[in-house]
Image (cartoon, rainbow, N blue to C red):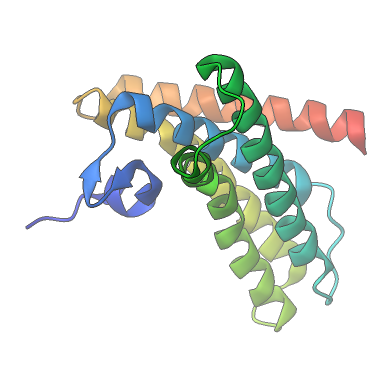
Length: 179
């Protein structure tokens, strides 16, 4: 049994060990990109020193975005389905589809923690965390190719670069307008 790299990097796109279909993968990819963009927007203006404030800011961004996303999806689902009260299954579905937002903070927090304990310089840790987020965003193009049963090729690399540049532009606008 071979291990495919995309299965390790994009676990939220699998359910019970099987790849998700498009209908279930699409909201998770959306949450994944959304979460990564907001985590990057939280990371860029940080001025890290030896304390753990940066970790708290990233965790707070992930948690508040997760809650807002679940709420927005639940309201939208009520409109879509025409229901008044969501079922337990529906609520769990929204929670599961929003988990990629929380996962967006995991690696950056670990990297920032390495600076907090003195294993990395704070600025190096911040830069590494930002690079990880950019790689995660660009990597979604590889996942989309996988969902389309296509092998990565030059167009995949160009698409990954374009998605990364566009996401970076969105982050720059957000940081400029809000900080």
